[in-house]
Length: 334
Ligand code: SAM
Ligand code: SF4
Image (tube, rainbow, N blue to C red):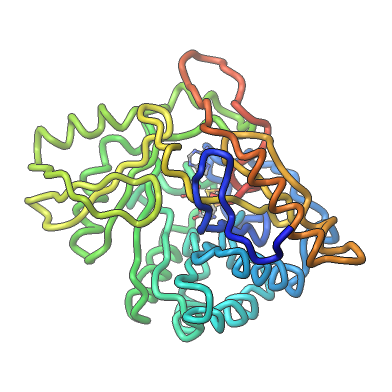
């Protein structure tokens, strides 16, 4: 066993990208993501700041070059900025990029410090610019704070990308306005298909909107030209001639993208999930808390490479279908 061998899975995919969930908690309750009465983990189950840091260093030693901090909502964790600062010191020293996915409700407070710590880009999830629709969808009337957070990020010099889940009957009519707004602000925007992860109060089938349909509709009003831009993720991009901006599509259901997967995900309790859509996992918390953490961690990562599946098998094809997994996206980290 080599403590610093690169992470390569059984399908010869080199794993260089870690999505690290720092909390499963959130201040919003997006209805496609979690139920209103979501039960959160007891705090003692969650990795400490020191453990998250040690774990990240272990990953960097194994060739992880990009870490995205996520959740739940990463910025609701109290010591979050300390983790960002600690990991920011590794940027240029093993780590090529440190990023974050956030709902932006608290970004106004943290944007400058995040940028000062070495973060250059953030993904902000925003599904609508309509305050009432936002309040219904997120079950919290937080659009003003979100927009303030986005403005603060821009002001601080962070590059912002907007992520939008396309939802039938909820935001499908306002997606063009959102794209035009994002491009007007100088932001890329990526549309995402809703995935059947975890029980929620509604039937996801009712709101599932294939992006092929969204694209057809956009093409009736705009000129979309394929763009080779890649961010190391599953999005495929087009340029929109009329807005002058870039638009991405993430299509886990209509167009599987697992061939080029370069990522793994770790929950706030240190469970490494080898695939967003599978239950294959190894317990890194146990490794970290063992008598020989370096060796145990290296061994656990070797196991993860052996069990990473070739692809996910999500479908949303009928009303009342059960989620593909009981685990919510807020647990695994989006
Ligand atoms: N709270 C942060 C946020 O919303 O940006 C980070 C975590 S959130 C789980 C990450 C992303 O997952 C968000 O863009 C959200 O829209 C997306 N997401 C959550 N549940 C999803 C689902 N069932 N299908 C598709 N995307 C989902
Ligand atoms: Fe919270 Fe993000 Fe899930 Fe919305 S999508 S409930 S902001 S974790």
